[in-house]
Length: 424
Image 1 (cartoon, rainbow, N blue to C red):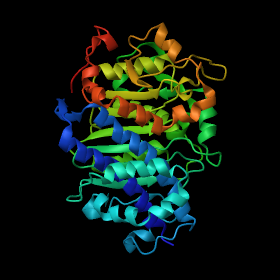
Image 2: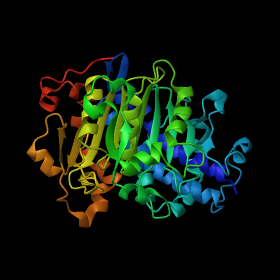
Image 3: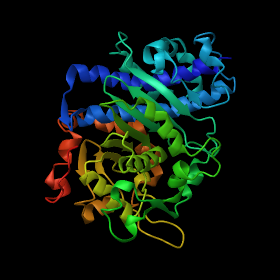
């Protein structure tokens, strides 16, 4: 019956992911101030984004089951929400005095309906392990993390994303779901690897040369999913995201964007657009932490993206597994304007028992070879999975907790001596 008890149930999983970080940061991790904002260390900043990127899959899957009446959760959720979102995207920004749907309001639903989740979620063991880690240290004393919106009602033709507000860490988080099955447009999007001209963000037009003043070339499928989806029913995704996040970007807040696989590619393009926007209400720098992203754009896109990094407008950690095939595709665009595709941002490459860091500003032949398609495609699901990413990050936890993303941007071995990043 109760599709919206179900709605809150799964978003509670996502909220718990963020809540875990709030608790752990208060106990055993430090922060460093950059531009007046306190950022966690590399591990504690990236792990909640990984969990959100995983749990958004579960949320979308279980939300669909709930709307189809496949779950009977009983009367476990406030009735004022139940009838509002049966046939439209979830928007609970009006609850809790305008804060949204709080963690503490729905945490008990998760505990009461674990058996239902197991029946619907095929990857339940990993999802359960995340929940258990969170519940081991959860703090129910205050409301600091809230769900705001989740867009999935037209998942067959539009990308799926959610928006969270983290009062304690002062950030608004946009999380994109990655590819699912062939019932959605996700794979059509992945395979539409022709090039599309994306308008150069306003803050870059006077700083670039030639055609880059007007446009950069990016993967058409990824671009269209956010900016030019002709099958979108309620406006373009980018415009809806702006409307979703603007009411919650208060003074002192930052914007985070994250996702896995297809979701990682979408998060890269969205972060690029937001960081280069001249809208005064968008705080800079924008932070993007992605997992297993495929290529997104050509050399011109990389040039513009790196300029945003130099200007201090964007921070990007692109996490990959060394043997994952997905981050090596598509190596070149399709269609008449065939170009080599390029990665952007700081790459944290995870291997079994080790890691490496690189950036396109100083990449050489060795890194290009590692980005080639010479990967073990027969085991792609293992290396591409977020569980493998998390396990390898846990192996490197102590080292990653000694690093800060902003410090990496000051590392000449990564960026070269001429990379002088502005501090906003």
